[in-house]
Length: 82
Image 1 (spheres, rainbow, N blue to C red):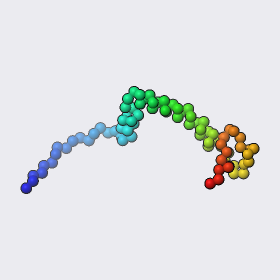
Image 2: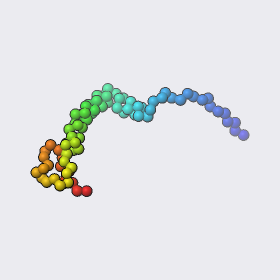
Image 3: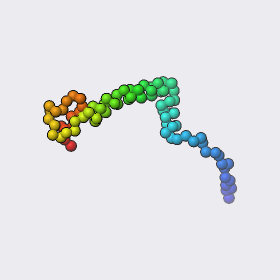
Image 4: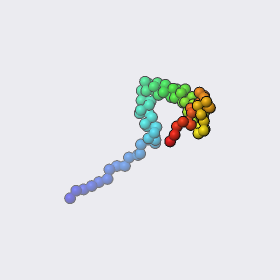
């Protein structure tokens, strides 16, 4: 007959979320990863506002628009038929 005994209980690990651990392991694991992460964030900071302005905020969504009413200041979505 086998004798079973309970193992000693351990304290749970330090409280860190899975997201924080993933960030630490993947984006901030070395100095080169830190530099690349900040360069990528800076590029997103520079490029995202003009892209959003052109594609959404300054865009022409008028379905009756013709070629003359659509200027270069924003995208012309009236010619996209779904």
